[in-house]
Structures are given as C-alpha cells and as structure tokens.
Amino acid sequence: QVQLVQSGAEVKKPGASVKVSCKAVGYSFTTYGISWVRQAPGQGLEWMGWISGYSGNTMYAQKSKGRLAMTTDTHSTTAYMELRSLTSDDTAVYYCARDGSQGGSSLGFKYWGQGTLVTVSS
Amino acid sequence: SYELTQPPSVSVSPGQTAGITCSGDKLGQKYVSWYQQRPGQSPLLVIYEDAKRPSGIPERFSGSIAGNTATLTISGTQAIDEADYYCQAWDSSSWVFGGGTKLTVL
Image (cartoon, rainbow over all chains, first blue to last red; front, side, top):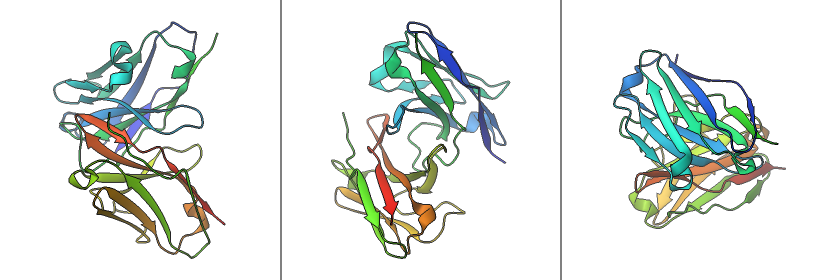
C-alpha cells in the first residue's frame, strides 16, 4: 500500500541546516508530486512547497523561499526538504504528503508521512 | 496573499450535527479539501473536491460550498470526532490552509 516514510527527529542549533527525507513506497513515484507541510507547536498547518516526482520542478511558498531547497532521487523514490539558516521559529513537525503531478491536485493530500520533529535550540 | 478563515472552535453535543465553515475570496471557484487531525497524528483527508469522501471515511462527514464559504458537516457527531479540522485550497500556485477549528464534543 502507499506509504510515505520520513526520517527521524532532529535537533539543530540556530544558523544550522536540516535535511528531512521522505521515502515513497507503493506507487509510481514519478506520477505524482510531493508537498511539504509544517506545523509549529500548538499551531496550524503551513504549506512550504511542492516538488514534481517526475521533473524535479519546484514551487515554494514565499515565506521560506530563500532558505528552502526541495529535491528528489527517483532511483530511491525519496524526496528531500532542506531548510537553511534555522531559527527557533523553524521548530516544528515537518510532514511530506503526496500531491498531484503538477501540484495543486484537486484530490487533496490522501497520503501523509508520519512527521519529523525538528527542534532548533541553542 | 490568499487567506482562508475558520472559526477557532466549535462545540457540539454527541449525536448532534456540527458545522465548520471556511471562507475565502472566490472560494466557490476553487476546490476545497478538509482534514481531520487528532493530537500527535498526521492529518487525515476527510473531504476533497468540496464534497467527495475518500474511501474509508464515514458517511457522517459531508462537505458543501456556497458562494465564498465551504462547510464541513459532521452528522451524528461522536466522541472520536473531537479533533482539529483544517480546510485547504489552491491559489496562485500555492496551497493555503485555514487556521484550523478545534471541534469539542461535549
């Protein structure tokens, strides 16, 4: 069945970078895209960006655009999200979710990863 | 930037009907999805394309949209429905989530 399996929790110091992985199993990786969503403690969901599983094209939310890089490895069917210059405001659970091949799928996000807690603390 | 507005909280008695609204500019021209999120869990898609239920979602969950407001309706609300609910829409090459509504069943 379809699963998105994310890497484990991370603790980082301010100014550092973090790279979270999301391994897709059970479906054709290149037929869909992956969106990344984060949730700060006690807060709502915030969309960060999308990457095509086929072409690697990306769309990023304006908020983190200059610090964010999304990539994929089609051979290992894994998507990656790297966030640089971390601050305490980046402390959150980061989720990957299966999206459409062009982003903006009307079908919504039926499949989500289990979430990766990133803690930024000195 | 585009915004979706939800009430912060909604309360409902067990067995009654709960309605959670989501409003946004020209929302009727976009597709809306709804997610349920229980504490410590990943979000669960309960409605997509305004009113469709994914397989495995109980029939008591329904969605509708009129004008600029989408509504998630939970009929015969049960204690297990107590959770946070988020609406979502696509605008200008970005996904937007509503701020979330905490549904309390009491």
